[in-house]
Length: 226
Image (cartoon, rainbow, N blue to C red; front, side):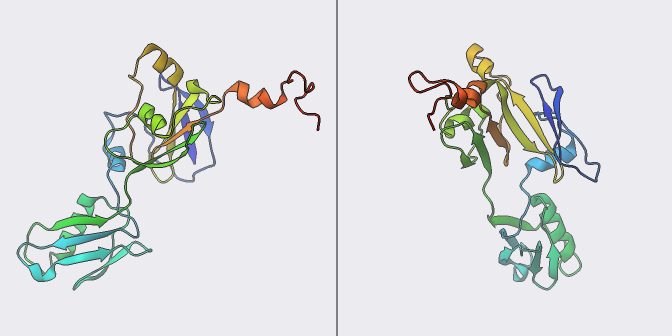
């Protein structure tokens, strides 16, 4: 997996993690002016275990109240059999169902409603009080996400907080945020709004890395007699 790391001006400062045999489209983390293929990534995509209902206004005999996506990504539709739907957004799912039934029912607008699905989330790791996975409820930026995770530890390096965002199955991008400067001057223009699945990582500062090796008064040169 190639994972370019961008600084606050959008310049690449770190390079590669793993590898990829394909040539996926690259983009820059931003909240606007995104290409259409990248905009699609922000829409929820149906996954195995999800369920949805289908309603036909003119032919209710084909209504289905609980269609579950199987582990292999297929669903079983009444009078049609198995249809692959995993990875489709809700508009794409509606289009697939409408086209699939077009040969046996009259032309009509089909209603598809998700019933059970993975709730949007974000992850905060590293030097925060309570690292973990959190529900993404409403508009949330990076500063708020760190606060939800309990705030920075004393060992946190505020100036190099990383926001990882998935672009495709093969690509993730990372944005480096100087939250120390951001909070000090009160300029939140770089405080990005989170997308579902975003990962925030707060690294250790330099002092915390060498602290175990610093001499402690009254104990000894290396801080431990053992």
